[in-house]
Length: 368
Image 1 (cartoon, rainbow, N blue to C red):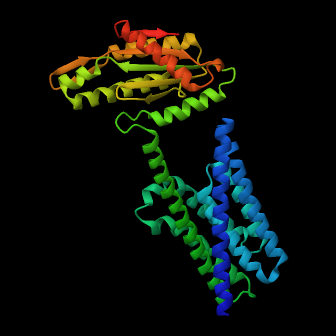
Image 2 (cartoon, rainbow, N blue to C red):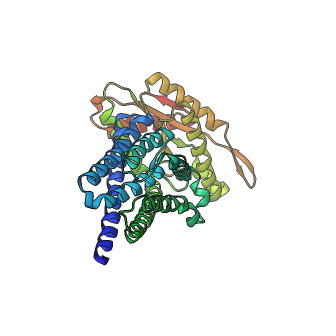
């Protein structure tokens, strides 16, 4: 009997962890496809996951029917996944579909009754709500996971009371397996979230300039090359700019004011660009040098944007210990063409126009 109990624990726990692993693979793959296809619909992102969960629940129900001797083992796995799926549901529509499928299957096992339905649905809704209000409960993990454990305890108590063929020991073993498996899933979920946060932080540190929070040179090279290779018939503009007499700012006011100048310039430009188009990006490509990518932007619009940036910086006060100072910048604008052969050639042309602006007296714009 001890061996059978150990086998039950092992099968339930490994099964639900396997379910979670495949779920995360589908989730990651779906997000990548959504990005590639530029599909932002909630249905497109949630449908594969809802279908996967529903298919697993149906498979477990079929296994419980096909293997009468293992009926309660597969039913237990089904119950764990169904309760845990309430934490996975991304919106109310996903929750409703999963619960509709799960409820029909659970009631088909004879493990519940219509009188228990309102209590069951209320408990599942409580678990679902924790996904959104859970951050307020993270300091008390027990309170966060208690509703799910109560569902499990109620479920196996009901099964034991209403099925005389089920021994007390078997019911207890299955309940322990339910609790252990759910805690394993919850811990796995927490680990995944922490891992994603670490990856996001490291990615930000690699791709962004630490001082200005603009994207850095390495990211510019990658993004510009990708845009150039994929531009097709769509226009692609590039603006490069250099803060005028920035060395004099450092020499006269100190490097702290110089840093403040860079941060203020970057913040103002990013705010202005994202007001025009969220796809416009600012990059810090050198000390006081910046670049702006303008995908799907023709020359006329690029010219209007660069002149807006010039005006924005002209009226931008930089505060120092000796009062405020005003800055200007020089700009060069180039439009990408397949005849360039590479993004590097486009960048060199834009840089050439920038230096024409500087030779013409600075605070100028040179558009191709």
